[in-house]
Amino acid sequence: MTNANIISAAFMVWGRALYKKTSLSQVAAELGVTKTALYRHFRSKRDLVEGMMGYFCDDFARSIRSGYEEAQGTAGAAGRCRIMARTIGEYFCREPEKFVFFLVRIHGNGDLAEQLRSRGIDISRLEAEGGEGRIDPVLFRRILETVCFWVAHFHRLRWVRGQLPESAEIEAELDRQERLIMGGLGLRPAAPDFAVLEERCAAVLPGISEHDGLLQAVAEAVAEAGPWNASMDMVARRSGLSKSGLYAHFRSRQDMLARLFITEMEQLLAYTELCRGFSSIPEEQVYLVIAAIAGYLRSRPQIMTALDWVRVRNLDLGIKQEPQLRRLLAGIAFENTGMAVQDDPRMESVAQWILFLVVNTTVQLFRFDPPGGGLSPESFRKMYRFVASGLEGCNF
Image (tube, rainbow, N blue to C red; front, side, top):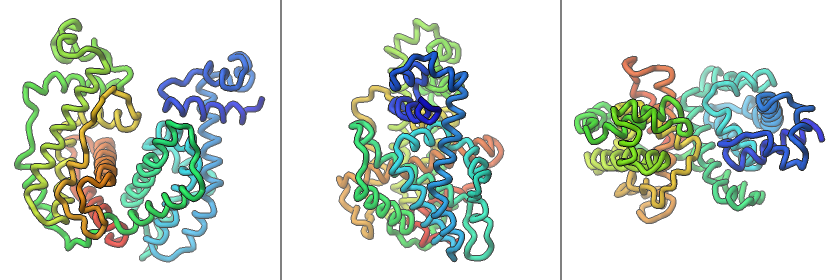
């Protein structure tokens, strides 16, 4: 048994549970050895996780190096982005266990860029090139988030069934991702009057009612401690109720989180549908959807954090029927994409992608520009251009 054997087993067994449980006993059982035997190689679980991080970064850097070098020699930002998106997407499609590790343990913490630089892969050099070769770093983040979303979508059913994708399936998926990244939803908008559309959404933004107060307490507890550590006691202290009083409202902690998720998603969908009705022009309707989601989340920072926990950790809340996110885009005629039929199953996935981008962007803005610091709408306008028409419609 080697360090590499142990690390590979940890990717497998911890990844199956999306890192909700990470015990050394699980790894030992996978390898058919005692837990004591693992300690001869790694002194603690923390040492093993650090070993996984190093192994992942080495493997990732080695796998994307040829694509990185090709991008360096390519003129034009759109071409560079296309090459890097396909290169990274292919790695994650072929390596589902490492993709889960990246998504749960690395994505969003800022460490990966420095790790890659130390291995000779400096993405910022692609971003910093002058002239038409320069990549906008904010736009590049949206591209990588798009790759992550669709790779996760690609793996979801296969992961449950324990199936590895065939090469032909991977190539078809990469082609689909590339078409979306390059052309977006196929809209070719003249720039909408962003400020007017934003004002219309802001004018009807719902406040937080007394009925929402208890769920607000749930959201604050989840934002502080995360969904697995948010206890009924924490919610009771914030709501002014006794712990026994909470059970008059929620059957369990899982029920409490499910009610938060369902209630907030229904309110968000209703608000977005209202805002989308301010225009009948598809290009404006798409931006109204983005502006409405962003405005709603910014007005509820604790709830936004709680929903982000659910999204990132793929939490099982026992919800039998989740809100139909295709409602976000209902009635918009995407004539250039073949998605004008509203019962097309792709509409649900596209709506999830847009929500994913908006939540990611809003969370990032709150991290670096906290409430009261002034959140620039330009980030969401850039996102709209990318969603609507892909790299072909973006000005670098």
